[in-house]
Image (cartoon, rainbow, N blue to C red; front, top):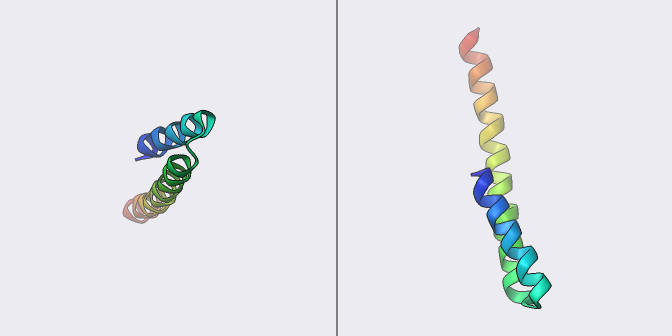
Length: 54
């Protein structure tokens, strides 16, 4: 999932450099949402791992 966030971030940067503001904004927004989902799932995975070991 982190890979997809990075891909959308790269798309946003390239679109911004080429002058496509709408596409760049949308791609950056999608990358941000995917990154936050990744962070939540990562935190849940760590908590599950720690509670399973005890």
